Length: 398
Image (cartoon, rainbow, N blue to C red):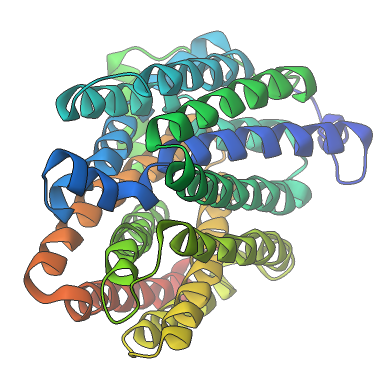
């Protein structure tokens, strides 16, 4: 590893801006390919004859298989380097997305969505470790803010593009377009991502990996951050999985393309994550994390109102608050874990995407039984628990 901090990438340098462009490509592709099918879940319900909770498996299987593969991907990146693993994941997930566009049935589509999740496992956790190792500690918050901002942009473009293209050409053509965009992003990442200079390959066997995991889980702060990721992602995916079902039904009866425009609010997530990343770098994440979670609760309550403008404003507030909270928590993991960073990041993302998979599907049961009031109530309970944990972290964390 570098002998001193001056060897690390600092804000404002050419290497920093190359890193930012690479993170934009990685964040865009990861979240465009992960969540591109979310706005067309009602189409899956209609075409394949499944209910809302079952259609959500197209998202939950991707995030679920990705979650369980984070630790193996982290170990692989320890042996082969962060950058090569990330390049492979970008290219493989894009290729599998292209293949999923031509599969004939629901079962085959779900199997391919699960395979895409496995391919994507080499990106989010490894990216957090890559940034933590290569970037100056004072610039980690802003760099992670850029990555989370790119994630927001990717999620927005993937969902918005899918909604519009699927309405006018079909969902298969839309998925194919997302796969092609993912290939371009993968090539861009390979071109701009700086070669690793702060990477020192640790060699984990099963025994050392168990010791590493016990150490991370014994930390006073990290396990609470993992639970935060689980709850926050569960809230966010629950809201977005079922808002399309709500908006296409009376009294709103919006078209698929009109519902797609809702995803423009992801731009708020891009701005909020970049802004709060800098704030967390200055004030410390312990003093910041509770703020966006409190705003998240207010946004959920707003979606329970009947007027369409109130629902849309609530979705916008939820989006900005979620990305701000996630940016703060994920950056805190990188700062807190002074060793075994890939495993620390992988554990955070394991909980994070298990929240997406498990709680996102559980939210479908509340939709089936109680409609949107059930979804909003479920999400609000999870958010209140997350807020209580954030207050606790404010007292014990650093």
